[in-house]
Length: 633
Ligand SMILES: *[C@@H]1O[C@H](CO)[C@@H](O)[C@H](O)[C@H]1NC(C)=O
Ligand SMILES: *[C@@H]1O[C@H](CO)[C@@H](O)[C@H](O)[C@H]1NC(C)=O
Ligand SMILES: *[C@@H]1O[C@H](CO)[C@@H](O)[C@H](O)[C@H]1NC(C)=O
Ligand SMILES: [Zn+2]
Image (tube, rainbow, N blue to C red; front, side):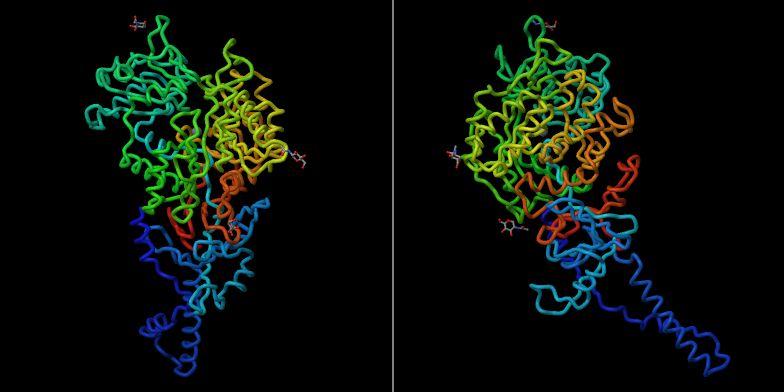
């Protein structure tokens, strides 16, 4: 990717703002003059006509959507202004709040240099402006007009996702499978087409037993029943990656299994044999025998994710689970200039209860702001779908069962304190109300009465099910709620069965969090959900499935929790920046890097039914087009 970037830079041509000479058009006209009837009058008439025609042609050339900029063709100049002719269609999304709608934004050398009305930009940056830091040569800032109907926003950032896993799971996708039979067929098709080396694992992701006729976990025997798959090592992760289903060949590799796994579960037959499904911490038993990724694989996974993400308007991803060996890989990619967007890594240690912050150096904006490693991701519990979320009271649909914490309650405060005191941002996976409660207790103790509430920017990753008094407490402690709107619309069909009508009030309760003065940041958890942030934006503002349905009808599921479009836009732009200590991204205000998305419609105004059809036309990072293109309107 660095090669492509280098080539792009080399072929970048400054576009000239000088007037197009009139001569060629005039000459062409002269070659076929109309036959003169009254020489003197017609001569002056022709000259007038020629001049008029020249001006018309010139005006057309200037005004026409003539100039195209794209990542593989003509690149944008170092200085330019992007302006709308249709009013305030550039949303700068400033830190202090609001949309910051303006007509124009001016970009100079990667950064936003200014913004405002077209008239203001013409006055301050027009032909006679002399940008600072240049050679002193007088030059203007070319104005590129957005095509009709288009809008510009800051680049979208996914606050919680798994980039390498995304690339990995693109190989064999099981999402939406309606039966075990369908999954077996998809895996067979993959195996038949993949020419896997001997001993290589077949790994896929995305099954969900809640979509099957019999909503029960599958077994290793189901895989062995296929003649194509028999004998192969196969590991298939559930859609939420909190459960994994393996084949008998993998069970053989795992050998003797422990009777009990703290914070996890080995699903067993009544006779005690493992069925082949492992939950939460028990997945570590599979990890112990799973072949590690090579850097070649990692690079392919990252490239796939970057390509798909840029095409959807993502300019940054906050990586919610980065083992140390992956962090080292990211550093290497940064050093080689091979990061195609910005990454914010939350590291995690092999041993969940350990501090490993001394085994890696923090990274602050390496590769010109493409990589930061200064956060840790801890895991308090599992997920709601597999009933691994730790609840304060029993599941409504499974009396006697309340899920489980992955680490004992008393471990949380010392573990989080250790990370915090060593300068790491502490982001904890908390789904169930018990997980959220226990982690908030720890944060409350760590912050004590005098510590700055917002210095640590502690984050609850998912913050999915919370007691209402814990939402208030989190907001007061300055804890950021890191929500995934599409989780709500995926889970809304069964969440209330699991939680009952009372607890559901504090579930996926983004607006309640905001109303108590808390800050929220938005993401997707891809590959668990789609990489397309527009789907998250839509889910946040509608609380509807993509087909416009919900358990509460077309008005949305618990519609009082809907975000406004402005809040959702902030949740994918300026809030992720704040939640990752970045003061150089997230807004199109002066001094920030120009990371932006050109949309073919207006996300603030488009009809709800049309929202998911809005397309990314161009994605820009550091002022350069990295996906798509702009045809000046
Ligand atoms: C336990 O039960 C399962 C399912 O009935 C069977 O496949 C397996 O062979 C049994 N294991 C032992 C050790 O008997
Ligand atoms: C907090 O500040 C108060 C007032 O300045 C002081 O009396 C108290 O000892 C401090 N507490 C801690 C834990 O530092
Ligand atoms: C961001 O913070 C750094 C360090 O505090 C400062 O030097 C820089 O000017 C800030 N940038 C912006 C755009 O505020
Ligand atoms: Zn996640």
